[in-house]
Length: 399
Image (cartoon, rainbow, N blue to C red; front, side, top):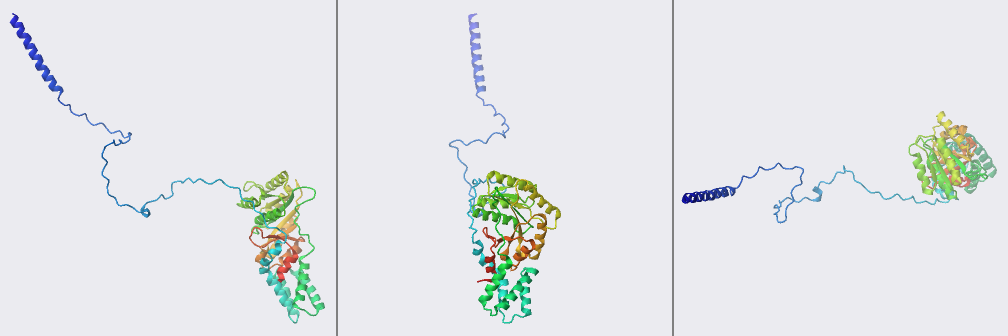
């Protein structure tokens, strides 16, 4: 019995050992690899580890800088602008004797009149044909019919009394008569300093294209050169960039500019300019009005409105009419219409260096009964000069 039990125990042990060997061998058998996972397109590419071998570089031809495609500028480029600097204040040229300094420039264009008259008067026989030529020379220079007749009559009388006619005597005679014709006794001072108040108020009017805004800017320089403080009123609200142009002129000499919205009410801008001029204690307020075509009645009426609105604060001391000297007799038509709307007190003749028709000085004064106070003799900033009859006539007839 004991032998049978022992045999069963040995059999169980042997079977257990054989089962362990079979299971062990199964565990050592490698399982098949799992299927590859789908790539994660959101994950960044794997970084190479230290020691990984880099790919052998490929041989490619090198390109010159000319062959490289540079950016075409379509992408916005941010450029840092330097901070804006305040414009440097200029010191205008003194006005005293300015016309004398510009006389050479004036004489280049005016010599045809003066020298033509001297040549005719120097003829041995002054017959009727010669006097007619003298008249034609004056009329061609836009002196006007009545002033021409007056001058010729005086010349005839004086030449007859003179008897002998040396070149120097003729020149002296002609100079005296021309100065008388231009008018030596007219008050040509621009009224900017009323005794009882500040500031003086000056309106600048004129037709489109005469250089009115530029003249206003140059006049500011004249006043600053004479030691006055200036406020500019940009009441030409209809012409594109007129206010910008005037403000640029003002900034160059330190003058404050009052402006309004483009297309706004000119009278409102003029009113504000005078108001600010008072508050700032300025000596002068210059008001640049819109360049009005003299045939447009409505616009001319508006010019009268600007003057009336300004006078609610203070009287207007000067109304300067800017005329282009090269327009000749057409300028007289303009002057006549403007004088009917506002009381013109003085004339500014621009581009006087670009015409041989210096007689317009005489004609326009006769037409309006007011003096030429300023003349423009070029495009430079300081080429606006107070008008001086003697210097003008000397430029006409030369030395």
